[in-house]
Image (cartoon, rainbow, N blue to C red):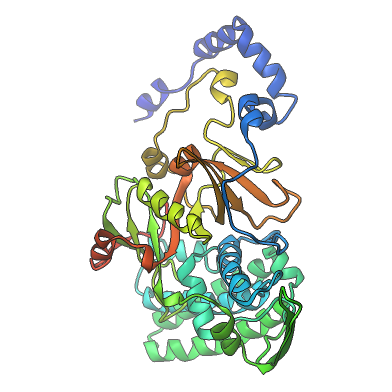
Length: 446
């Protein structure tokens, strides 16, 4: 074994050969001089893309509300979904500006995720500590991330409030310290629960102890977020300057009245061409949940063209479309560009980057990282060439908070859309009747 390892090691002769080839390649030397002095994105960005990324769209969703800003928290899913819902609220109630409280929902999301984590620790109490699933749980006891089903779980159970009623706290804007302290306590409690099991205590005793732990977790969470309102007064003026007032309304009543969508009739369509997820089957991810007893994220996998057809239909009807993607790939935040071949890396670095979308997902190069809203599209000869995207990173990035997505980027890096079920085709409806395939929690779509 040692001999084989030694024969595979880099040698001095190899390194000398590598260096000589670099020195003898003028293009490589110029690239080295440039890249060692600056940001490779700024050096490699395509002038052709910059010149042709026009910010005009044949179909746009009117929205005068200020762009939202998730700041230093990984709650893009919550922001995108509330941004999507508020567009419908604005249209139905003729409200130009409204924002829902992310602080309110994040409080409940953290509490529910804490309960879910501790419950999974109890369920998996017999597994070894280095079991891959136990390790996964301990590595991510209280993640910021989520998807549509998690928001649905929260608003169905806890309702919703305007941001003015429970505005942002420091910890909503910067979740690092909250997550560090809650993560510490949850791992501490996990150790105690496993020791209780090892000492022979029953499952019922473990759950009694969990209830005690959650009382402490709730106390910590409200220290970070503040106490949630149970009833509140709220008023607004519509576009016609008519005054509207709500007195002593509950979060549930507010949600039921002001969310202009039947959230029970919303589904997720994905386009994940991974070798593990054949098209026209439904899937569900293990542990991708924020609530014990909540609905699971069941999604149907279809070709990208199917997502595009529905997104176009929605925008033509004046409806925005919620989507998830890998925003890390081929993006430029300052200019707000999401373009395939945005960077001339192959020319600069003199090497091809040729992984397919399927390979990127299978081999860890790509994963679901961000959620946003499709708010417009530019059609040429009735075919999309670029899309308008509402982001949640504040108005200082992109085009005052909006991004431009090329149609090629849609195909390469957009991974799901969330839509009312009225947009499903007959084949999709039939496919959703299947029993979903269970995927591991470390899958690329998590």
